Length: 295
Length: 327
Image (cartoon, rainbow over all chains, first blue to last red; front, side):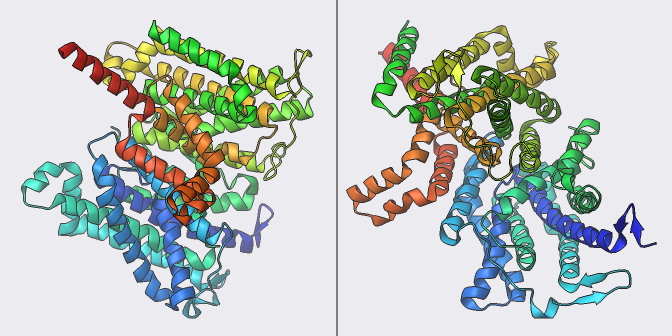
């Protein structure tokens, strides 16, 4: 048997792989959002723009300075992370005792500025970036041809998600972080520099977004608007997963990527809105999200 | 008394405004002022930040455009169709989104609006990237030719005044008072026995329908409906208009809409003027990066100017009155 419901299996596997890759991006991005939200109670609208900057830095590194892909894989998240720290110190810090909505609005404004700057310099058309030589080519794994770079994207994102989870759930730094979200005053009384922890957390979340951007650079058109449509899908993913858990963010990200891949195979016209339809269904059944806690 | 006088004066000014200012610009301001007022009804008076109002504005624009172009409906019927369509979409989006609170509510409205954006992109009657172009204005009751800009202006003014009056009436009604109570303390409103969800939903639908009225009118004025109208940037723009003018004030969104439309229309001109007066050449290129300027306005408003123009003015008068009483 080589087809299901008239769809060749090769096509199905291809779409599922594509879905898994999109799912990896959703997972890293929603994980970053969830970490920032956990400690700062801010929905970071600029997350998509930071992802875009990650991809652009990768391209700029190659184009202007001849820095290779693997160096940028470390360098871009660090730079964007530092930039995130600056945003937190200069802007977000002033909003913590206000309604959380102001954080969303501020980061929306920051998004407009960042996208606008890149658009006025590079225009709206995309820049191309080549897959690094070490990761190009494809292998035959029996039932399908697997491009190595795409497999690498999935493996690298899962590894980063796992590492993040270990840091937060299993280390002392992580326990400080989690305690800080519960009761920052108490943690401060133990001598922990909570404002510093908050800054570092925002920087770390921003770095995660940039990491996704570097991974994306060789497989998409790098354009100033690449983050802005993606980020809203990621918001939907976050609503589906429930903001309470990091696990929920990662799992629902991967799951929704796969569902999107299936939708693209069987009902192509619904693939762009599949995530939103699922969000609507989840909201009707479980308003707190699949892994969220009822408040 | 002073308030009545102010309303009378500004209405008089609006009647004569097209003698002095380009009517299309004025109509644009009125349409977006109505849109911002509709949005502010929800944010300023019920405390619900929707980031998806472009869905109602834009879909109404498409429906109205379709009715006028393909069905040859008269403009009033087309506008009514758009408003009803926008209100119905508002009912669905509202019913789903009020199940979550605060930031989650905002994200759900944003996500559902993005879904409506993709629908507009894929459906046939919206004509994808091109949008609907050359929508005829038609004539009012078969008598008044709306092709004439001045006639069109007075029609738009009537729509705006009607919508504004409805919002003022709503805010000052018992229903508006309940909304205010929900905004201030939702658990208390619940324990007082109000069916909070129903009130919120009604406010959402009303706000969506008025936003749709603005979108429908916009299509008749400008003769097109495109993806820009349904894009989330449009939702952001209306938030900004309300924020600049002053959320929770009745007149604020009107001021904000006028300011932002002016900025969008005349940024180029403003930049060149600044460049000429300060000798800094960089300003001359301001028109190329409207998004950056608007983003900066956003950031400044959120950081330092949260009450907006109308809110700051109100606070200033309140301070003055207190000082006078003390003296």
